[in-house]
Image 1 (cartoon, helix red, strand yellow):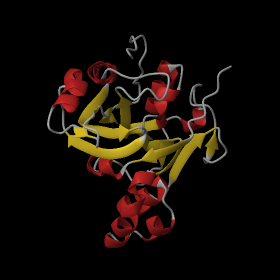
Image 2 (cartoon, one colour; image 1 turned 180 degrees about the vertical axis):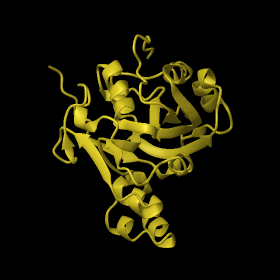
Image 3 (tube, helix red, strand yellow; image 1 turned 30 degrees about the vertical axis):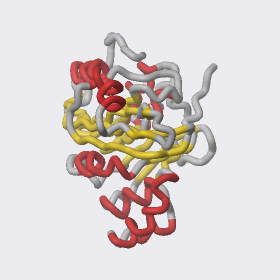
Image 4 (tube, one colour; image 1 turned 30 degrees about the horizontal axis):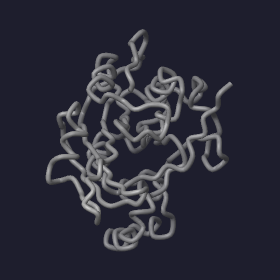
Length: 245
């Protein structure tokens, strides 16, 4: 049996605008849940101290975890996560159906692209939906061209499928990360819809693209972020055909 270790997940502070938006819809009296052991991305460390100090985020100054960020910025005190690496609160395989005790428990579920590491997509996506209480909020990244796991997603199709299943789409965003030989160079965050099917061409050939010192055009790694709300308790993917690429 294949077991999925999600590993330490690096959250970029670039996504704060859509995280802020998602939190406007979250019932903070219920617990929140994250896939994988979440920490703030290494590339944000130089600015993190000033960011935490300027906003008086005392826990984040000492603890560079997403748990600290959610508590300091949004008042989220009950935060749980899962993985098989021994670093998360819960040790279970997200590629298998979740236990009944987790169903409908959480007001917020956060997926920073971890589902691309899971072979059985129907189980993984259904698990995220089942974790949520009615009116719970899912903030999920769907990777377009990162090639880090088993899957990339066609954003229009995956969001249409989740909407047809009964989730309410609240907002979308796009984060393009530029690397040169694994060295982070630049990022572009866009809140709102973009022409998904033209993403790679759009970001590679417009002035927003970044050139390295040798004049080489850098192709970004693109992730689409979505905020979705579970408006009723009987939502499931059912027989929907999952489309990845």
